[in-house]
Length: 109
Image 1 (tube, helix red, strand yellow):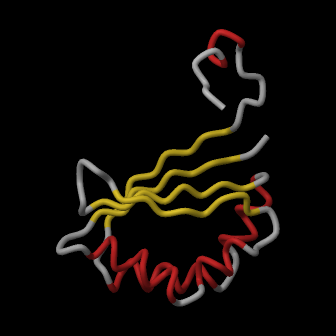
Image 2: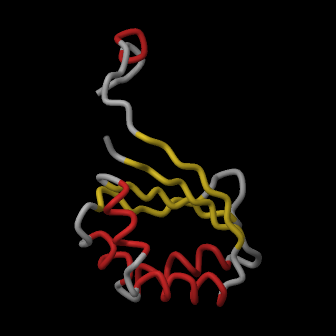
Image 3: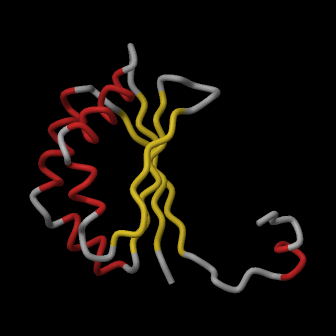
């Protein structure tokens, strides 16, 4: 079982994209990806709303998320969110490793 959190960062005047660029350029993203239990940490630009950036953040389990939230990087992330005046929406998903055959039929590998 893994846990995936989708965070949508929204700002003005390309601030969400600038936030993601600074997260990557500062090495913060690389450090998060190197944390034990991190499975995925990727930013995407919305085709419908260029002022919104989607972060897909996946972890092996809740303990890995808790360790990440207790890390010094969270202070850096919070400071950058404030710097770029970003607002967020969050969705959280728990993996289901048993995809039904009728759903798998729609997956092209």
